Image (cartoon, rainbow, N blue to C red):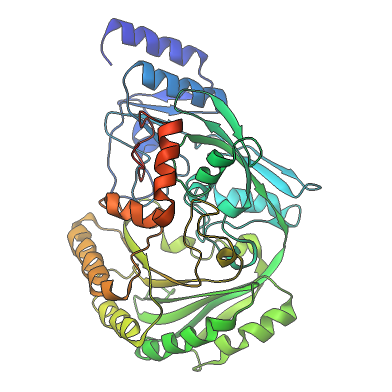
Length: 454
């Protein structure tokens, strides 16, 4: 960035830019380049902190005119940390916080820097909600473009299933308002295709009436983990669309570091319906702790936040399972006994209901069968423990491999997962996505993501 011509271009770029352009050495640069995952420590050449879609367009054009690679930051929460790349222009949407709710139309338009806690709060003001993430400080854009699982997916489908339109900045700097009617192929690709096709400056969602839900944590001694998981396997087999129950081997929420087995229950129906359907989960055991009750939907989406603090080290692996066999359960219990971090877990996410009534090729997200996604969300605070935690995660994943289908959830892929993992995330949709990548981004401008190479 040293030549006179480039300096002049940078000055012109800054002059019309509504946001803030940062270079190494600027006061805000180091904070702006940090993402949620503390394992990621990269230094972009420039950071363009956009305030509006015009800033995004100008950033794409400036990067292309000056031969700079592009990375895109929404909420900065993705475990792989692809939002920041050494020597690139990071297009940072985190200042783009606009949200507009149309109560009569039951829709919401939010800019690409909005977090789920911000979207949930604004929707709740009107007694409305949509499927979002399980951790409220996650950004809406990356989660939605990658599919977007959440507590309402059994009732209303994935976040991607609730998208009505995307304001997209393309690789050549155009702005498209992409809908099913305007461009069905591109709209199909954006609902699960990650950041491969452009930058989502804003997203319009379908909303649903919802205020209060019933939910919370049910805890059992770790000694009963195998029994609890066998009970859980049978108990979730006939849940209604209103209910979602995930299971995990975790550590006690009191900070003691004690290993426990737990179930996280959620119900979007009436209080009476929730009591009837969640009663078996609350009564089995008996549990050592039951904290399940009514609360605002937006509040429920914050209950896991403290377990994933900003700046913590994160290394995650996941795969869909062939079921929840006794062999898998025994392996989970055995491997959790040696987990090195009191912040790490082995988690089972149950897919059922509305999310499974969408065809595997109807959107770019192919994972539509009822069953379980097993996640190893390894989290720790001390960089000195990096090797031990990454090794445990990889070894545990390998120990469970015989119980996996091979299908992967896009947003859980770690930074060192290669092309095979991306193919596994898209399954039968991969070749169609490649063809659309050739059409909309033939030069692979948007490649610093879980990339679909043209």
